[in-house]
Image (tube, rainbow, N blue to C red):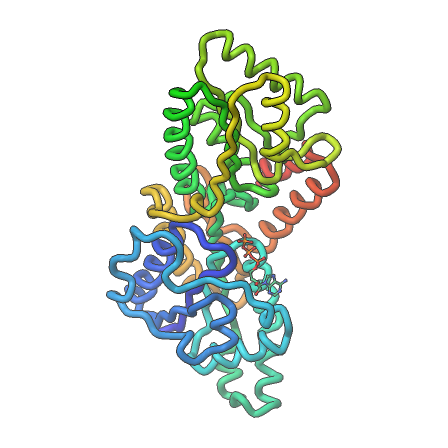
Length: 363
Ligand code: ATP
C-alpha cells in the first residue's frame, strides 16, 4: 500500500488528535502504511524514531484529548533547503509519498514549497548517492493534503478551523465564571482573548457571553472610543445592571493602528467612572483542555477526507486544503488559501480593514 505520514505543526489546537486518528484509521482501512511524524517538521528532518508506523490501536483513546499527542514544533531547519533535503531522504527511506500536514498557514506554505522542490531534492539525493535512481523513479511524486488547525479561525478557505469551537467553549466558561463574581461585587471585568489578526474569538465570545463592549482588530476603535465606552457602561449601570464585561482581542487597535490594551481600557473606566475594574487575561487556557464535539467531528471528517484526496490524486493534482464549506468537507487548492490568508494579513498591515474583512469573507 501507499505510504502516508501525518504530522502536526505550528501552534497546537484542540481537535488535532481527532484528525490524526482519522488519518491513521482511514489510511489503514484503505490499505496504506501510515506513519506518525513526531514534533512536526523537526521530526521529519531528524528522522529515526521520530517517524514511526502507526497501527489501529495507536490512536485509541486520543479523540478526547486536547493538544496533539504526536507533538508539534517550530522548525528552523525546514526553512533551509539542506533541512528539506534531509527530510526528503527520511521520507524516501520509509516509502512515504503522501503527507497530511495539520497546521497553520506557515506549515502549509512549507509543505507546498517542499512539494515544488521534491524532484530536485530527489535528484540531489541520487547525486549524493543517498538514494538509488530506482527509488527516485518510484517515489517521484509527493502528494500533499493540508488541514487547518488553529484556534483563531484566521485561515481563508474554510468556515471553521480545527480548535476554534473548543477555544470558544473555554472562553465562554471563563466569562460565565467571571460574571457571577462580578455580579456579587458590582465589578467591571476586562477579558483579553487570543486573536492577533483575527477578532473571531473576541466577537463571538462577546455576543454569546453578553458582553457590553468588544474591541477587535478588524474594526479599529474610533478616536472617541473612550467616550463611547464610558457612555455605554454608564447606561447599563443606570438601567440596573450590576456588572460590565468588556472583551478585548490581543490584536485590538484604534484607527491609527495603535494597540488598545486591557490596561488602557481599565484606566479609562477607573479614571472616568470610578468602577471597581479587573483584568483577566485568558492566555493559553484557550488552547488547552478537551476538544468540543464539534472539533472532534471536524477533525475526524477533515482527516478522513484528506486521505481520500491523497488516494484519488494523480500527477496533475495540486495540493489541497480540506475545508469546511457550509456543512461539506471540500478540497480547495492549498496555495489559493495561503495566498488569500496572506492578502488579508497584508490588508490589515496596510490599515485597509474593510478590504481585509471582504477578502476574508469571500473565501
Ligand atoms: P500558527 O498558526 O500556530 O502560527 P503556523 O503553521 O502558521 O501555525 P509557523 O511557525 O508559521 O506556524 O510555521 C510552522 C513551521 O512550518 C515553521 O517552524 C517551519 O518549520 C515551517 N515553515 C513555515 N513557513 C515556511 C516556509 N516559508 N518555508 C519552509 N518552511 C516553513
